[in-house]
Amino acid sequence: MIFHREWITHYFEKELRKMARNQKSWHKAVTVGSSIATSLAVLVGGSIFLGRYLDARWGTQPWFTLILMFSGLVLGGFYLVITLKGLVASDD
Image (tube, rainbow, N blue to C red; front, side):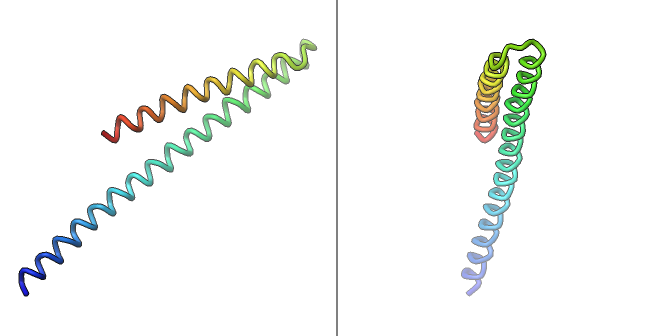
C-alpha cells in the first residue's frame, strides 16, 4: 500500500510539472502571436495610410499606396520569420 501511495504522489507531481510547462508555453504563444499580429497591422496599415497621403499630396494615385503596402507586407513577413525563428531557438 505504501508503494502504491508513493507512486500516485510521484505521478501527480509529474503531471503538475507538465501542466505548469504547458501553461507557460501557452502564455508565450499568445504573447508572440499578439505581438506578430499587432506588428503586421501597424506595418501594413501605416504604410497604406502613408501611401494614400503621399498619393493625395502629389497626385500619383495609386502608386505610393501600392508600393508602400507591398513594402509593409514584405517587412511584416521578415518580422514574422525572425520572430518565429527566435521562438523556436528559445524552445531548444
